[in-house]
Length: 255
Ligand SMILES: [Zn+2]
Ligand SMILES: [Zn+2]
Ligand SMILES: [Zn+2]
Image 1 (cartoon, rainbow, N blue to C red):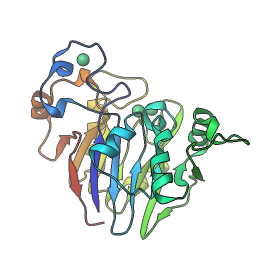
Image 2: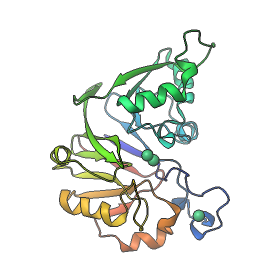
Image 3: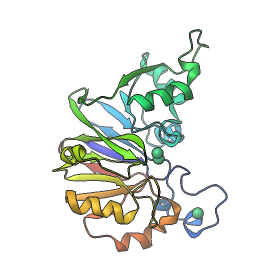
Image 4: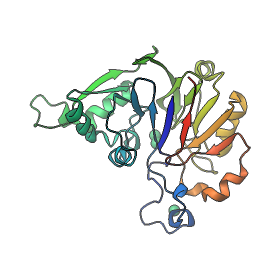
């Protein structure tokens, strides 16, 4: 399985519009972060986790010409805001886009893109095939994906586990039942917003506490704010088996 980081930035992206800080002014491409998403390529299918406001740009940048599904972690705008552009795939593939989302995220998508669910649709609107995430595994082609419920302040968000790979974003609390589902993960992606405490995201210290419990072979931090600092500087503070993800980073797993 091949994982490509399409975006690794927090909700505003990095650079932040109008910001003059060192990170936002940096020439290092690793300091440019589109909104958080990954592309997952298995032996037979290709899907993204989330489709935020940069979805169109991410599909173009990665030259994606086929997309089988989108898995949604939660309904915040930075994770679903780009779904109008599934139209391109509707047109190419001549079918609705399969979108897996939990109950609250489904409600967000329906309200965000109400015109796509209207009784009398304008021609050419995005065509969704919404599928509800429950406690059951999701099957996409030959791949089994386990949804893992987590808390993002008081909102239920879903992490996803595929074999030895687990992808967590926008969480700041892992319920007891979910630890068991994450156990044994060898490659972990987890959100780490910044160094300071935040109300709804793990900060760097809290993400590292999760890493120290799960003990994956390799961890990648994502959903990063400009407040975290320059990639070249912050990378030096991490242990060898943990790194800050960056846009375009590719991982290969054997799951
Ligand atoms: Zn987010
Ligand atoms: Zn900045
Ligand atoms: Zn969020």
